[in-house]
Image: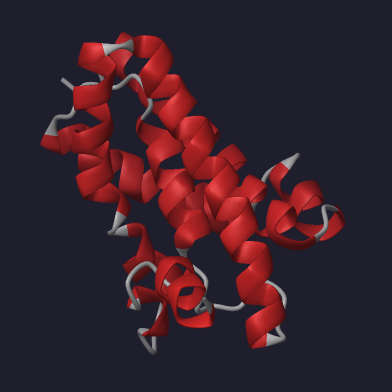
Length: 155
């Protein structure tokens, strides 16, 4: 079980990358953008349920990995970045422009942690604090992309 948790938490070991492991780990979210969009086309409720399950699994796995690694929010844990990136792409068309801008904006918001992301990171326990700040950062990125789309900046 320990090995499976670390495999998932590290995004298939992307979190062990020696530099910018969160950025490298976020790359694992890109194929999920396309996979989740297929779910959206089949059923919006199932799409949202799948995202909720991803977030809950990320919270649980992150919490378990924290205990195994004996380090809160270790750089090796990137499942939170993966869930955050998927949040950044919810209900967006899977274009390469959206892929790249969602990635860039998500990383900026994940690093800056605007409220309430920073609060969540500091005050929520275990895997919830590890994961939910990234989900908030993803939602901020999603919102900025929607505004950019609506104003023609991404065209």
